Amino acid sequence: MYNSYELNESVRRALDLYSQSMIKIAFTYLKNIADAEEVAQEVFLAYLQKRPVFQSGEHEKAWLIRTTINKSKNMLKTGWFKSRNPVPEDLSYLPEEENEVLHAVLALDKKYRIPIHLHYYEGYSIQEIAAIMGSKSATVGTWLARGRLILKEKIGGLEDEEVCL
Figure 1 (cartoon, rainbow, N blue to C red):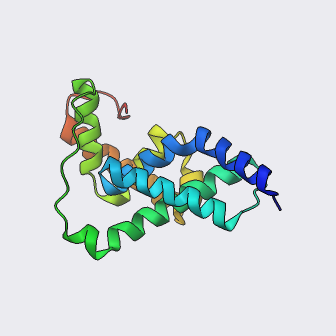
Figure 2 (cartoon, one colour):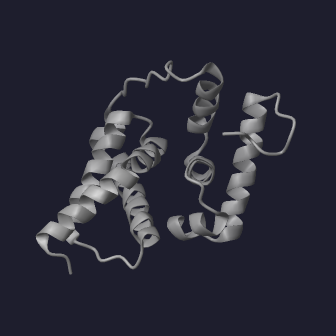
């Protein structure tokens, strides 16, 4: 169990290490940066309240990602979220090619979008994604393959099998 100082230091360290990844993961669900930041704040609040004890840094990161996914899904279910008309995100600051790829990824169905993000942007293996999402490795592999195929068709001009994200 943590004392107050150790808990605050642990949360501060996790915030520094993982907050940007958590925001990106929430963004893949919510497609809005403000909502994604709100989810990340809720995750860190849960961290402070629940005071989980982790076996390793990877265990901590996995808990934060799983909690981010769960809170993002919860936000999508709220009546307020469903009934609003969100302002589209301005991604014009990205180079045109990156902007096109990100828009294509965000346009994917959630079952393809999340594994693509976790694999290419966060560097997780198929087995790790399966554990995070509570799915079978074969299913995640299929989602990645289908997602890549859809992206290849949307973006076009890609000569090899891998989509460079």
